[in-house]
Amino acid sequence: MKHRCPICKAETDSVLHKDFPFCSERCRMQDLGNWASEKYVVSDPIFDEEEAMEGERKTILLDLDKPDDNES
Image 1 (cartoon, helix red, strand yellow):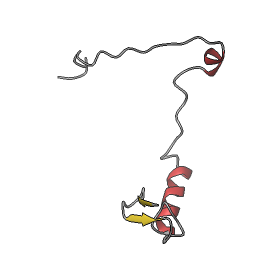
Image 2: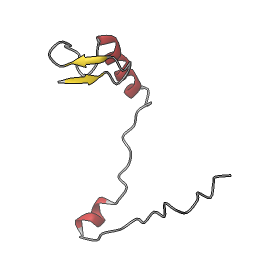
Image 3: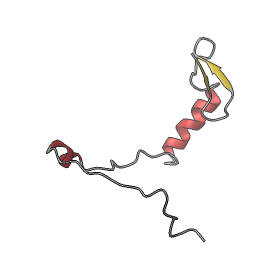
Image 4: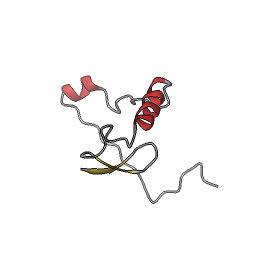
């Protein structure tokens, strides 16, 4: 399987690189450091899990034609 290293974007191959999907141990350790320093975070769920269990559905409508209020 071919892929690009998430850190340096070099091409990687699962057959050739033991640190796949990273190209090297250096990139693998940099990624680990990013998680440890909280540069990466797992976001909170958009919807409350309890509401989803109760069968309630919510719909979010986005008006893509309307200009953003923050745009100048």
